Image (tube, rainbow, N blue to C red; front, side, top):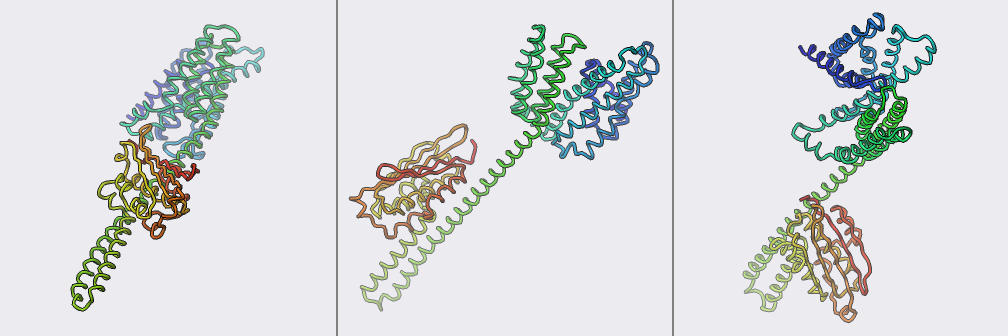
Length: 520
């Protein structure tokens, strides 16, 4: 039953396409090659039977005019001669490298060979036609062969690439997401808004303006095809070639009009060239998309590694806090047992040393992962955390200004990166030991559905205050690595941002812009 259904369906499709065809626009050739490229091999006999059945009616009707010899050869399905080429291209030349991709060069080779075979079969049938004029036979045969070749080639070029495009869309999308992909496709948008209106205008010009102006309008139909190909690769060439071919036929003043034939040849040449070029463009686009995907994956991995490192720092900070408490308890227990054996001055010295040790461990834990961050978030860490306290204890004036309601909406990874960058920028400013005042500004916002943050750290010097700055024990408490501007740039790149340093009047400015990896 399936064989019968395939034969009947193909016969109906072939007959319908045959009614739309003429000498130099053979749509049925495109239907034939599309069936050979996509129908499984086990149904090929049914396709041949269906094509033969579709040809029987026309052969019987015209046999009385052209002769029964012509009728008997006309009923032989041309598909039989195209099958070896189609199978060779599918199997040996890898026309479809993957289920969702197409080798456009092999496709064009297939179309050319099948068009050549179809022209040969048509000419063999034409030569057996009764009543063919003997005068100028060779010249007439060349003209007819040109018509047949252009017709077969244009028919396949107008239909097969679009069928391949539909096949690719079905292979890469499920049933539910197909309509969404179609409605959001830039190719569909450009076709509807630019290609169709421009070709409709050219059809109107070619139909309403006689003479050379109309011919020039038909020839100019290649321009939208070229534009769409350069924008969307071979897929744009496929859609543009189909629409341009139909537009040329719609503007045709007569069936065997030589000007229309010239325009079709030009459009066929343009579409072929654009398909070849578009295949290369599509490959370059896929390569760029692959590089972009790899870069995004690398950014995601780096961001996850940063989050993992911050988690380890947080665990280490908690462990140091616990050790600080244990050391204080151990000192108190030891001094309680030895109080009767120690002088009062020694006891006070030991208590003071225990307090200093506990404070240093607290500062170390706070620099690894600020306690103010854990309790009240990024604002408190930048205003009251370990880094601001260290600057205040060293005698460096510090001012922090934070604007933007989106700060709390930023991802946790980006907020951690902002804090670390602020510490790195302050450490960089202090490493030169010519700063007495630091101003930090943080701005947050969103653009195009994506959140961003800008951090500016200004370091200014007042030489009257510079001599009072205490540099000892400052740098370990700032929480920066001390690796300089390179470390700031590297961390900014992970969040698709950039950093720079520039001179100010009486100081330096380090500015960083970051983008949230989360899309709202």
